[in-house]
Length: 295
Length: 290
Image 1 (cartoon, chains in turn blue, green):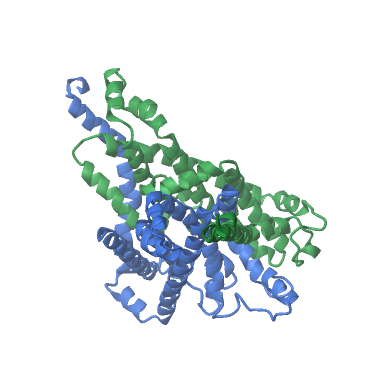
Image 2 (cartoon, chains in turn red, cyan):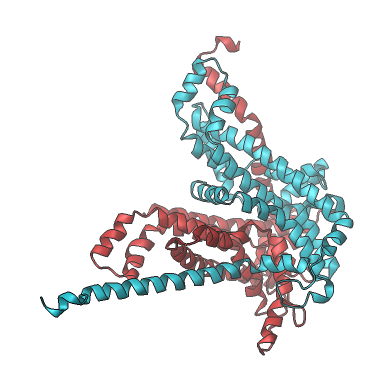
């Protein structure tokens, strides 16, 4: 039968033969669960007990839950501190590294190395750094120069930036590499023309480099924003004795989802939280598309 | 001849000063970048250093251990669990990587080189899954694993990552660069479509395959949330899940925790140091095209 088909028909058969397993996979492992997550968010379900229809009850509960608003603020604190800080640091590094020839590869390697580490392992290393005297490295260093010690992870105000630091640190190398690729894509002739016109470095930076780097900037902002909105590994591992603590001051949305679903077994309520996360991420991604389109 | 002709002109002096300043600037820039780079690797350096220290020396801030020892590694490995978790992670990351290389490239190739009804729908459907965060799917995946008996098994840990939309689009982008003429020629030579994909197209996108392999392997080696949810017996833990529990249990034995952290990090660092140039190129490729 296959022999009687035209070349075009044979192509169709082959294409669908190639796609059969993947289409099944995406249907069962991606689309069905997505729909299911939405569905569960409208249900009351304690995993062991019955599944009952709850309508918008989970969302109403979320709206009235002070912990959720605390978590919401934390999640955006990670985003609003983490993204600009990592953006500025990685740009400054990339800008100067791009102009450095001597041992360029070696320097680049130093900056990129943290990207190859595992978040869990590094969370524990940083957790050790943050311990009080006489354990933690940072406090020992502070003590050795005569400064008083800092409560990094035990303070409700310091804990969030302390947890964020290793996340920023681990992502810098990637951003530096992407920035350098973006910088290299700018034609040298622009800078030559600027130099002939006697334009200073600041004007070159603001009038040539940054405008031409816009797609790269948008990519990095969105990529790191999504990363910070989904922060989990660092927080969980640096606060295992009291996940998200002290007093929920470091708890991000993903950790709240994990807690609600797998410690509280309140699947419906957790699913509603995942829908909120999905919505936030969707808005960030759409913003990216919108900004890029106006180019 | 005037005196100014003998002495260097003001402009030349200026230029010399500029060159001197520029050199100074270059040196300062290099030193600052170097110091920054050293600061970047300090956490890794301290992790390795502490894993080589005796317990009584752990709280010293010196980077070089006074009496280096591999005692911690012997202790942690003799315990057996890290060895087990390491093997689990290796198996899971390897199988997932192979699966992604095969399926992502097959789908990418089909979407790129075939014209068939339904192509756009499949394309958009897969593209749209990029918008769905893993965190949203873990609850349904857990329920699914529970009803199919996949909890606490390799399959349970692996199944969500066997194909990725990211990999599919990365590969699709790279298959664009494979000339249609090559494929036509192979067809005329009597190769079937599977053979064309495997023997003609795949060898032409090797760099992209390598980049994808690095991303998928690293992603699965360090994955935490889903393995944490789906495993519940110590035997099935992956290295990050195991390390997380071990850290709690070891309490203040930081030299042992650092040893565990080093065991989980060193393999990827070694791979990076060997294939450095190649990996950085791959990251740029995947970052910008994916």
